[in-house]
Image 1 (cartoon, rainbow, N blue to C red):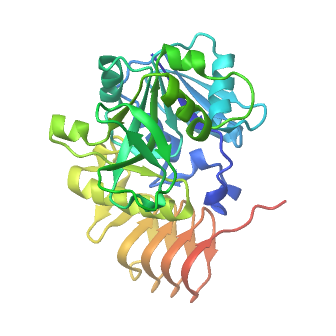
Image 2 (image 1 turned 135 degrees about the vertical axis):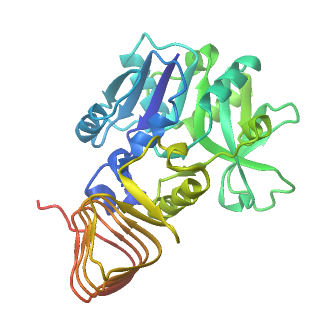
Length: 344
């Protein structure tokens, strides 16, 4: 079995952070985003994982070389942007040994979903393609998966104005391709999996939806799922993970951790951080590796990324301080992303 991670986007919705670092290597609670994506595949017996990359491929190569992985990993650098579908096709062309079943995952998904159960479902249902669906309460903001009573995907509805009764599922960015789906995948051109290939596959192949929540009924557990594709979701996922860690332990999402501590009110402090004794952390605060906070500074709903500096008496609320950025003494700032532009 093989896995392919789509990590080639420009990360435009995460600017200005992605002007400093490509999205897959943005630090999230002192681990790169790609660490969490690879961790989600940990229970699969894989021959190889392929990272389909473009923007930031060199930095991604450095980051993954530092990870302790149980399988062989290759990085395929796209010759030019070809969309999510074209990215898969080009990576497969470069790796002709890859066959079914192929797990494909978006490179900005953070989840505890047991992907092995999705693969087992795919094989048990004899599906050509399986798409994981994530349940949502308010479907009006999303494109929905249209599913028949026997679980086959019949189509996709873009942001329905009158969605009717639930349950409603959106595309969770996790897929299993069988042999027929791989054969049907175009090998040329720029195209989208979500907008082009999946609707065509739903007409011609056995395409099943794995409803996230099925594994909850089977195992009695809960499942975490989030994407980090926007500044808003990147900010929120920090505190969603802290909440999850408070419930289930730090090892339950992202693996064992002994380099940071959790405190009440969702405060995270890395061991190498340097907060002054008089610094005040009111609620939902992340102080990452080597970040420092001066005497009398006050932080509320704020994320200090690695090497960020907050000087004395500064006050921050609903702020992300990018790596290496300095907040000067006494500044009062809210609802911003603070970053220092790289030279040149």
